[in-house]
Image (cartoon, rainbow, N blue to C red):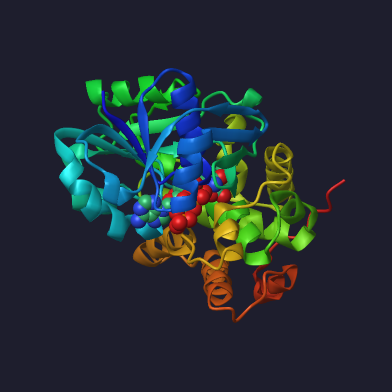
Length: 348
Ligand SMILES: NC(=O)C1=CN([C@@H]2O[C@H](COP(=O)(O)OP(=O)(O)OC[C@H]3O[C@@H](n4cnc5c(N)ncnc54)[C@H](OP(=O)(O)O)[C@@H]3O)[C@@H](O)[C@H]2O)C=CC1
Ligand SMILES: CC(C)(CO)C(=O)C(=O)O
């Protein structure tokens, strides 16, 4: 089985290291040359919640020679337009491309490699790139019921999706979903909400949750995700740690408070984590905000649902990208006080 991870930054390095550590032969493909050099010379070093180093084989995209059976796509979605045409000559009709990127990347990936070769999934753990050859697993994964939620676009349980699951199981349990889009919307609750606020305010998840206004925005963002998800015909699945998304209905003050407590609990396990969108802003890169909060706003527009909170995250993050706004909590002022239906919940 010829396996590759295309995009070995924060996430790809961790996944690849676990696969290699468990005896899987896998090519690490990344365009960061110094990182590729260190990976080959010293191995992949995973720090944070674990600490191990494993020898690996790494190449740049122009060194790809093989035809791969399974490719895990772990670049940012912003690279897809460049990387997918480069990948095509290294696929045959039986190859599978499994996109583990955030947002809803499957339609775009399928446009390039074909729907018959595209599967995808949501990833429930987090990582931060530390230095060439080194990536940090930022989340305590010991309480995760599963690490990946993968599926076919049409929801069928096929041999190939089970093969993909077998490989991912080498790192942590991969659940095969019969409703990939519901899983995608479930993950959007994390990415549009706390990741969106972490990027817009330039701070860690813990800092978002400690600030009353930022934490309130998380709940209103989640409400917009839920309403848009339902308008698109899906039901939100249980969230990370099996938490119920019901309180995102925000039907009264009590439910709002309940939702604030739910998010506070959810992120108490990753207080120092930074959204990958924030990591991009810190490196001066374009983020995936259009593919994350932008996806929610796009669906909102399609079904006539107002999404002021998601629209504001996009506006702030696009301005930070252009250096027109700082990476600062002061950006909270762009969330209009009139949009806050309920009294701010005070964390105890
Ligand atoms: N970080 C996290 O905690 C999580 C991230 N995700 C998602 O996973 C995906 C990957 O995220 P993350 O690992 O954080 O991202 P990173 O930016 O850390 O890693 C992406 C890697 O892809 C490389 N790359 C960019 N363009 C190309 C190209 N054309 N060819 C080959 N390599 C390329 C980048 O190199 P260079 O830096 O030189 O551009 C970088 O090393 C994203 O969709 C993200 O939303 C999902 C769950 C959690
Ligand atoms: C860290 C995590 C898991 C948080 O939602 C994420 O997916 C991201 O920020 O890209």
